[in-house]
Length: 485
Image (cartoon, rainbow, N blue to C red; front, side):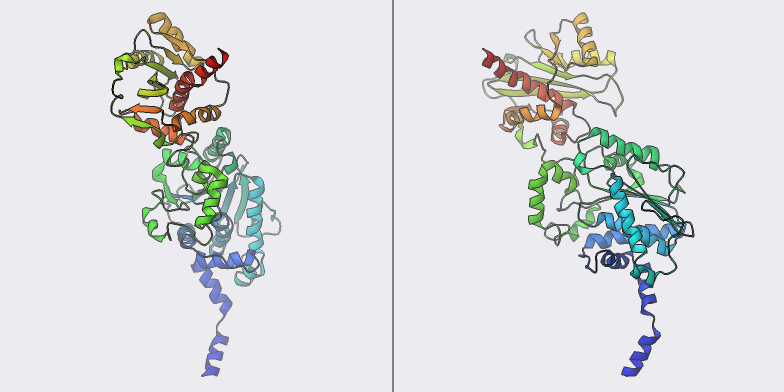
């Protein structure tokens, strides 16, 4: 019996059997690829790795078989969960063992990072393990650089970075791995550069627009980051997989909730104590984007929702007509939804507390906006004692001039700010945190609080501006006047 078993094993080619296993399972391929690139170190297994491997394998096999694409892939996962190696290193090599004419373009926020990931792919192809199992897949001798290498059958692996050029090239699979540097999460310039690069450069680079696929894998940084833009403008074109480090309502698809262990995505690597350390080190916004996959903390950051008092009516003995209602405007005149709104706030200051009666954000052309301002003030308690303060910018100047000429409203430009918006928000946050802002119950509250909680990573901040104006006018400036006196 022993001799028969030995003869049977001799008749089997274990290398070919393993190679076939790797072809049929990207997950098994990734386990061995990891060991190869990490000096024999075993990959720490977790369910999300198998999930992403299986989903990517489906996409690779579809492209090999010439199938039509249903949706592009959009994946949000935390750092240190194997995202870049899996999607940007192993996957391109795996595609070539299925068909070595597949063309692969990869982009990250940093040129140096893109080169590192590309070099790892090349190291894997040139490793003894890979050559042993896939001797038919090899690189062209005349085109083999760190950023671009090919196969004799027309396969391509090209690396670029946000803002880079890919003139004359196309891909069957285009991976965008963290298009924006997380350290520059609040930079509007960096964010717009990343979105523009996708829209104006990468979007047209699929060899076959009906069959090729974009794979975006990234951390969330802002409501208008690449994920936010894609989900806002074309949600039906993207399959969204969202895996925060801790169980939350943000998990997508929702049926993946059941795989979290003690509320954690990857407890072996991202334990509760490790995550608590990240919360301390990164702060609420950094942790929210990188690990919770939310552009802003759900409870708010600079302004937290629970700091505001929502009241049905004024305190006993305080009458609406007895208060002096003032108005704060951050103006813009346009009816386009993607542009900034004109934000208007009606409030009164009494006993060192702010009472907000109404907040409105509208997008209107100039003539309609003039009428809307008059209507807003008239229905929210305007009297001869009231003041209307307008943020000093070009549109505000025109509105102030028009209303001064055509109405008797007490309207004036506010003083120009001397600090950036985040600094100004921080300077008034203690007033809000101490429970001194009261919101009179109304339809405006949800939209108002949502914008405040999302600041500074939200799509708009017009209502933030007018709250800062109102608090600053009634607290910080009064303190300066008393100090001078």
